[in-house]
Amino acid sequence: MSAMTVPKPTRAPLPPRIRRPSPLGVVVVLIVSGLLVHGWMQGAAVRPDSLASGVFRLGEFLDDAVPPDVNRIGPILRALLVTVEMALLGTIIGVVLSLPLAVLAARNTTPHLSLYALSRAVITVSRTIPDLVWGLIFVIAVGLGPEAGVLAIAVDVMGFCGRFFAESIEDIDPGRIEGLRALGAPRLGVLAGGVIPACLPSFVTTSMFALESSARSSVVLGLVGAGGIGIELATSMTLLRYDEAATIILAILAVVVVFERISSAIRRRVLGRTEV
Image 1 (spheres, rainbow, N blue to C red):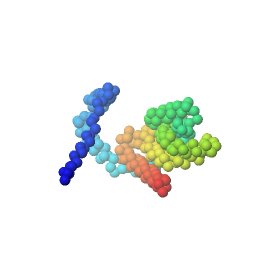
Image 2 (cartoon, rainbow, N blue to C red):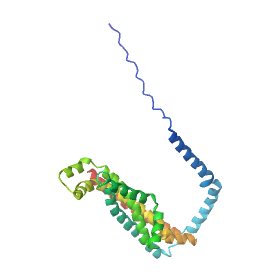
Image 3 (spheres, helix red, strand yellow):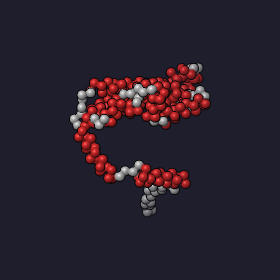
Image 4 (cartoon, rainbow, N blue to C red):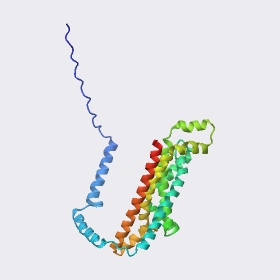
């Protein structure tokens, strides 16, 4: 009778070892470490003594800001309405402009490589320059007021949505476009019958995120003269009317929360329809 063979225990695979960093990686780590050390020590130093004194000054601010002053609630609400209109109008203009830009910036729908490079450059410039800088540029171009804010938001949204719209177009099934082209559909027919329906949920969710961002940006743009509630807030803070500033801050908070709630509800509704 042959003896039973006992199977040898299998060894667990060894965990992957950390790879030795490349020379470029070492250089990047050294540069980042140097910037952190320099920023902590000199450039953007955060000192415990300033934090300690800042806590007391913050307490003084809160003491002056509570209770909020509602004597100027009428002008504040009118300025807040202008801010909401700036965010809505700027977002709509930016989304509309970003649609053809995204078609040109997607590899599977662009008519020519030169248009692809040009549209990508426009998107990069629009996204790289902060909206606050765009606000300053348009204040110089068209003067003080909400018009400069609307244009700044539109350019910022165009860069934001243009990039994500283009990536969404590039991620669709290639067979969808090739099938329509094989049937003889023109370029606009391919876009209307294949690209837009496939990317519409992504377009909607991205636009809602842009709207949330625009609601916050429209407040900051008012600080540089682009109209809206930001001017009221800057004036109240400059004149040390902290109780009035508290009213403005609460009004801004309410508007931003409403924008976020509406945006979240629309995204859930769109995503729920696509999953059914």
